[in-house]
Length: 269
Image (cartoon, rainbow, N blue to C red; front, side, top):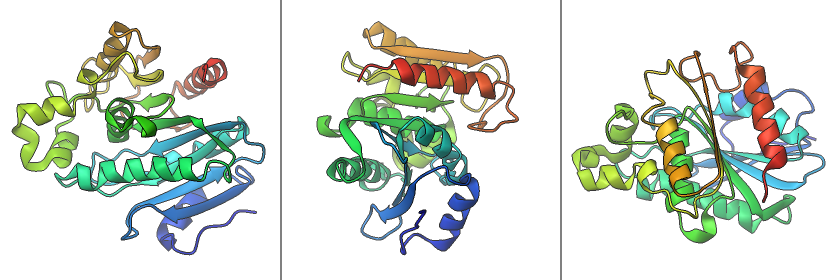
C-alpha cells in the first residue's frame, strides 16, 4: 500500500504520485530532513529489496528541484530490487554548507540509520544526480565525510566544474558572493577533488548540450577518475541537449536505460 507521510507538502505529494506508475513501489513515504521541514526525503521501497539503494539529487540550477523528473525512475529501480530515495534539498543561496550540503549529508545519514528497517545495506547506497544534482552527487562522492560517501555514482548531464566551461547559474547560486573566489571555485569543482578512493561512476551526456558542455563537465570528471584509477563509464550521445532524464521521447532513452541496467548488474559492491 502506498502511503505519503502527513507532513509532506500536498502539492509535492500530488506531483510524485502522478509521476509514479501504478504498483511501481510497494511502499512510498516521505520524511523531513531539515528541522524547518523545507528539505524532505521521499522513499520508494521495492517489494523485494536486494539491499542496494540510490539517493537521488534532482537538478534545477540550484534554484529549484525537479522532483517529478526523478520520480519517473522509481519503477525501474524498484523492479531491480533497488530502494530509491529522492531528496528535495534547500537552495544554497551562497551558503551551501548550511543548506544544500547539510541536507545531502543528513539524507544519507537518515538512510543509513534506518537501513535495516528499509531493507538497505549501508555499504550499498549510491547517489544519482541530474544536472546541478550531479554536482551535488559528485561533491558527496568526493568530499563528504568518509562515513557518508556513497558506494557508486549515477550521473546524468552533470554540472561538474565551477571553472571554465561551467554552468554559471549553478555556480553563482551555489557560491553566491564567493563565485569569483578561485579557492572556492577550485574547492567545489568536482573534477579537482577526485582521488583513488572515489567510488565507481556511470555518466551520461549529449554532445550538443551547450548549457552544461560535456567536454568541461561529464568528460572532465571521467578523465579525472580514470587518471586516478577509478572505475568509470562514460556515454555521450550525439544529440538530445540537456534535461532529458527519463523522457521516453528522448532518442537514446532505451539505449541509456539498457546501459545503466547492465552497469548496475555488473557493479561490484
